[in-house]
Amino acid sequence: MSVDTDCVVIQIGNSDDKLTQKEWSQFVAKLSEILEAYCLPIHFSGTSFSGDPWQNACWVMELPLIERSNVAGDLEKLASEFRQDSIAVMIGRFEFFGPHGLIEAPLGLKSLKKLYNQVYQSFDQECVPSVFEGKGTPLLFVSAILDDFRRRIEADTTDGDPLKNRNLMIDPVHDSQVLGVPHFAVVDVVERLEDIGLLDIWGRATCPNTGETISEAPLTDDCYKFPVDDIANCHECGQDHLIDRQTEQFYVLRKAKRTNAET
Image 1 (cartoon, rainbow, N blue to C red):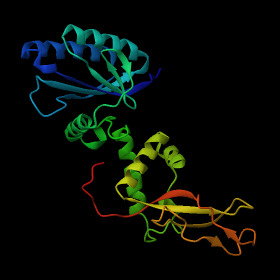
Image 2: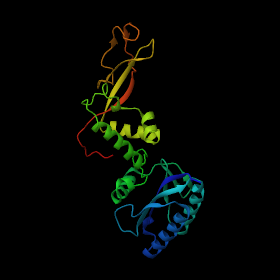
Image 3: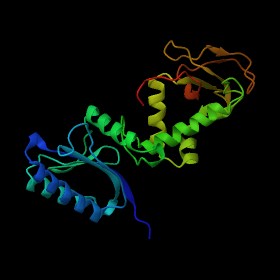
Image 4: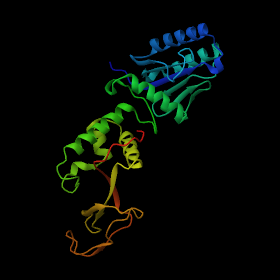
């Protein structure tokens, strides 16, 4: 029987250096015992930040969903026993176990990026489990989505024309189903790619009488307006139409120079 699991990142630190190296070793050993008792294979363990190993530690693993509350209690008890302020446990999209039980709050972005970079550099991308950054999309989802987008761009022979190659158009619902990733993951990746300028935004005008598409075109930089105000002699109904300012928008993949922007 399969067990439903969630991806987990656990990071601990020696709060204000309260623990000696010996105490820290005992703390890490007991925490490891707890995790091994509850979890499926541990994908990563080591230091989560640059610095001495006896000051911080990190694990990335799979946790059975039915054990979440039990793990929360065990970690809270262990943190209290060793005079630690908290043990941060990231589950799903920014859910944490802290000294007061399960809370929903994001880890500081600076700390999260350090953790992400440390784990990412330690494994080949295919081996990295779901490590979260930005809005909380698992790295493996990000990898699958970006690999799919890259293949679609590389296979294009139309010089990036989505009217000739519909595969350049992004449909989060359809793409998530094809790739087997959550819808939110595609949306998050698309929004991030838009932020760093790697997608084109197009609009789709429809006939008000039939609801069918009558024109698709890249939107202008002026408030993302459709490039024309009206359609004459609509091929769907034969009438003239004004174009709704709130034209349906969609994203189109395009080739771009490599950027140093963070992903």
